[in-house]
Length: 383
Image 1 (tube, helix red, strand yellow):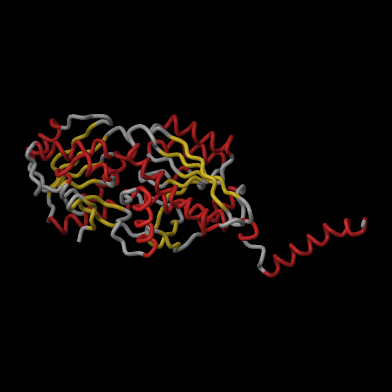
Image 2 (cartoon, rainbow, N blue to C red):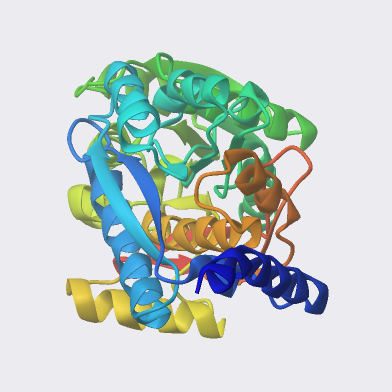
């Protein structure tokens, strides 16, 4: 009996060595009866709550699917959802909790670029992988090599939007209206300004507003007097809804397109602005009408579970969970953050609801954007 006990460690070592040599010690072995804890920092309250609500639903759907498919022995996701309250200071607190108390494998979020610009530095300093699912402002991934995003940047989406709008509407001169106190809206403004210059489109006037403003009539009156071919707006959905509604109320005709950035990609725009939203267009990373098998399945499942169709933010959150899960499996560990970071970079042409997905060398999203227009109270692809 004593000899058998002494041989046990040797037998285990030999079995593991044979598994390695035969390529059988895979992520399936690592994943047996284990959990990957993922921290979700999302805006459940505050100015970006409309985005955070749909992100939470998209993420939860992916988690439910993955855990059901994992069965009794596979790798499951243990989610930790926290509210970043749409403000940077709360985002910092949430990130510190995920890193120091929860010991998560990876962080998904935060919702706003403003928060990401400070909270992501906490993750970078701790060597914690973070995956943004709605951060599109310039400079986010430059924070460091543990920072990723599956959300296309405004610098990729906006030039395509302006190109399509110019071809569609023959734009020659426009007005620009943007939020001057938010990283996302300022980044969108810079991207629009460059894209307009590159397209040879004249900017007649630039107007700005601050987060929380409700009356946009002084700026819109100035814009109306310039008689632009279109109004270019970089705003989050709360202010965007007011701008769109008040523009039409002031008599700026529907023949003058309002063109927005990523902040417009929320059903809240259509809900809040009503008929005034008809004809509004914006660049996007995703559209519900995509016929990709993965997307059709996602839209049907999300609609059945939540009683309404998903938006882009739900789709990016859903894709983000699958991307993070694949990286953790590929890394073969729930605790080796460097291995998970390296595995994210190695993901190529992954089938997602966003299309074939890869990360660029700079850890930004790499897939094809679309241009949407509100038609019949829905986001449709601009043909």
